[in-house]
Length: 187
Image (cartoon, rainbow, N blue to C red; front, side, top):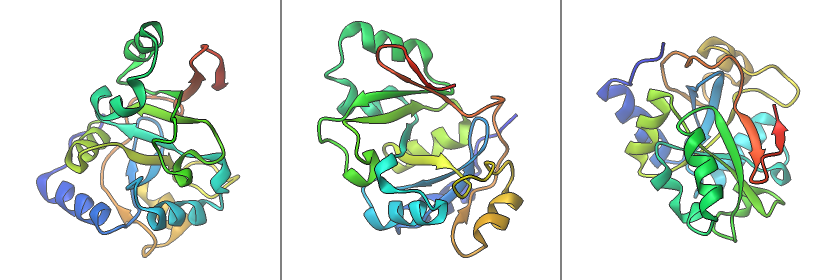
């Protein structure tokens, strides 16, 4: 099972994020790439590494619902209850963004994917950063997601990303993505 990051590991990762770097870290099920969602160059670097078009959009991962309140405050109580019952954990929801996230995060969609992580390292990173981070699997388009730091390095090299040490969480598969009507977009 995954452990929290040490103070030096956390400080190094936070420093990388604050200076616009892309970090690679273990998540609930696979290794992911993360960056400051407010930094267009950092998010563009993720898209370039993955060979992913910006139109597809990316996930925002947070340590707590409060970090996503700017997106959740307009939801109906029953919609909030759905999200609340599934978090923290490997459940990603598509919520309307109302122009409150940059286009390089939401792509061409009126919704943005959001998740509250139960992975200790991811939660620590979001807490230390002070808000949600972009999160996407660490792999080029069409390749299997990286399952360890060695695979991340094999995909992207040692100069493209800042590796945050750690272990994967207990989930056997990437997060399920649903819309607010409960439809499963990705199983």
